[in-house]
Image 1 (cartoon, rainbow, N blue to C red):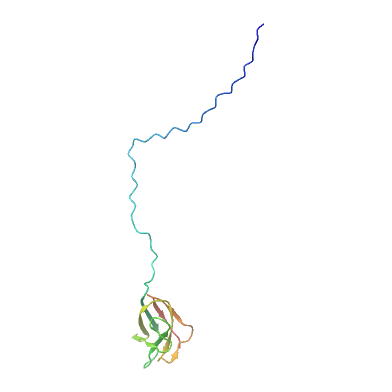
Image 2: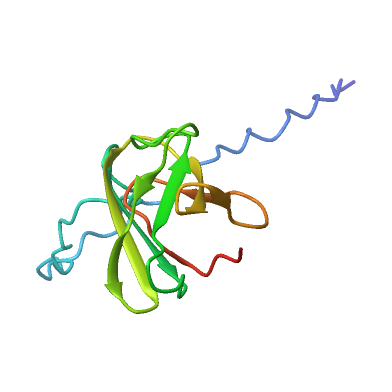
Length: 134
């Protein structure tokens, strides 16, 4: 009698995952990118730390009168006025040197009568033109 043995099936061999083939290198010369302009990054412009302030008043104060300015900064004081120069019949101007921060100011007619309304503001490097009322 012949004996037959059943053989156990062997599992199929494991499939091996392979990495994709490396990309083929080009034989063409590489393209050169356009040269970038080497400029410094943009810088926010700010006013100088200490700079002159020009204040102009557009008002006709009448013959024989003078216009003064008082304030709290840029060499001004609230106790005694600084005279403005008359540059036209209805234009008065003063240049305050070396303002380091924003300051408040107000006009005074003949260094006695204060202008109406709120104080004006100016800062380093500003050129301010106002029309005060008395």
